[in-house]
Image (cartoon, rainbow over all chains, first blue to last red; front, side, top):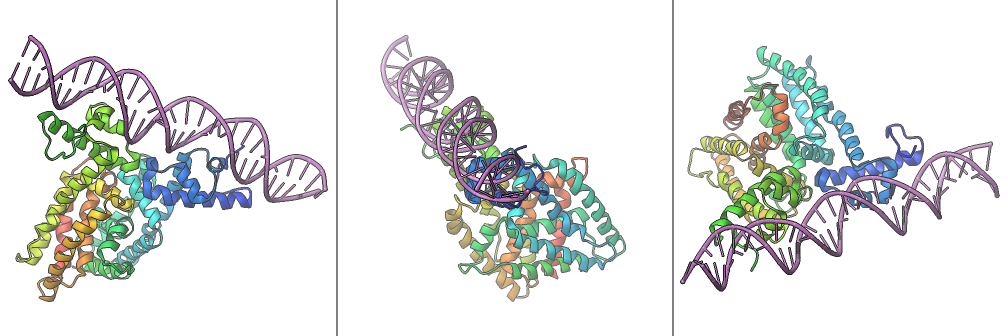
Length: 208
Length: 208
DNA sequence: TCGTTTTTTGACCAACCGGTCAATATCACG
DNA sequence: CGTGATATTGACCGGTTGGTCAAAAAACGA
């Protein structure tokens, strides 16, 4: 057998290191160029490996992409999973916003990879989206809906509340170029101010 | 001279029609695939023309893309230009939100084209962005800043307020696939509910 | 109508693309 | 050390891509 089929359980130390190097380089390139726009040569150069060497660890270009996306889904949904139905509603939602914003700050490439995929109509993600994302969202919107009914938070449409949280937080990763250009010449970190802004925004929205 | 150099002033009726057909097809393809992911064959097929015929009207693939982007900038900034410093602050900002949301509904391809370009680091747009977008944003944030000082709207960071408006409204175009998937099996139009949601959100944010 | 200009296209090209393969280099281990 | 398994690579391949060109077709104007 030539290709490492299960990257999460590589046999040797070298395999573990190189599969990780490749995935990291591929994340960099795919997140900027999209699937079709990225080339194996770009990924190989970014990884410091030769192109045939890439294809020693992954059978195809698409296999690299699929591996990245399937790893992404779990990471991506984790903050929403942590939303606790038993917690204090406003504080739970504000914590969720904070966690999502931290992910935009610390994992902007993952955010862009996801954005690229959705922009293209989610051709390689629609399956996973329906299986993993939708059930979780249905479950959590039901929780939010109950919070509204109980008068614990102001009246909001649960789905559109989630859309708002996603769009506002991911904007700072996906549109980073525009954000930094408009916030002035000094390359100050926009995230502290973003956190204050979003905290105020959602506090006013949820407590009315 | 072979190529039509100024598409806004074509000589003949055929040129006007075909340049427009090409730009429309290119918008469809570029907005989904990004610049590198799109091919001239795809655009030609979408336009119902032959590939050499495309290159009779535009010298290169990049020229088509640049033409689209430069046309886009004007359309894209128009709603912000209409923000009237003399108007009623809250109503002005809510109208701006409404105009941006209408653009997401009526021009989703333009929104995705813009998103794709920023995601890639705005390599073909950074110039125009600095010349056209930044001055306008500086001017309008000053207006918003004054509104805050005068106590006409609640305290908000002007730049981040604009980022919020952009991300929330454009989300419904750029992430349309995800939005429709999560809002349930029936393909109901999400925009009426989105407008109610965003109106409530910004009303609560701005009037505190 | 006929000659000129504009438009369209089939055939073609060099560069690039994802992927293969046999040969080579390196590693792990008794 | 030696030897088998693992890892790496240069050379190569067929298909695709952006772009060219000369010739044909269509539109236009007198």
